[in-house]
Length: 257
Image (tube, one colour):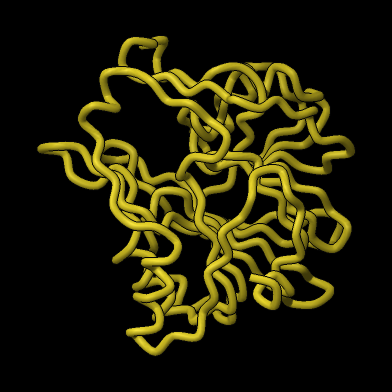
């Protein structure tokens, strides 16, 4: 399974020859609800849109996962799989092949890859978005992705899981608590799944963030700290700290980390 981190929560996943573009924010700025004064993300490096994409996979309907400017630029004939909330957004943008996956449902791509939705991040009191299991049906290798650090115990029924992409840094707001659950949540999922590799997502990349919200956010943790936490808990999972735009073979990356 080849992975390329495209900053923030955006990934290109190549599995069994299938190219999956996950939660892409690739062009334009990241703003929530046009509130530029509150929060704005600007990319400091530009990259060409990936070519020959077989599937766009969206975990949430929020702008940092279903990014309108990026989705407007991508080919609207590319099939899309997403949470029901994300599916509504891309349907509104004119995509012609959209599959909404509820938690527990699966979708196959070319009979080579199986994507299964699992409970992910709670967005509001009655909405739970998607995490995903992405399984190579030719080898059995399985990747788990959840971008906010909300992990369902149902994962323990899905073993083995080889690769985990999830935050390892805590991001908190006063009076609200964790916006992104990192260290404790990532440790818990490593204890459950004992994956070979864990790869951080959500934190940074080649991006400049501005806005009032930045003055309130606090962060805690990094890759080296999490390696120490894993070691203290006698877990063999390796932490891979990806470089933006660099393609790597996840199953071999631990040899060169």
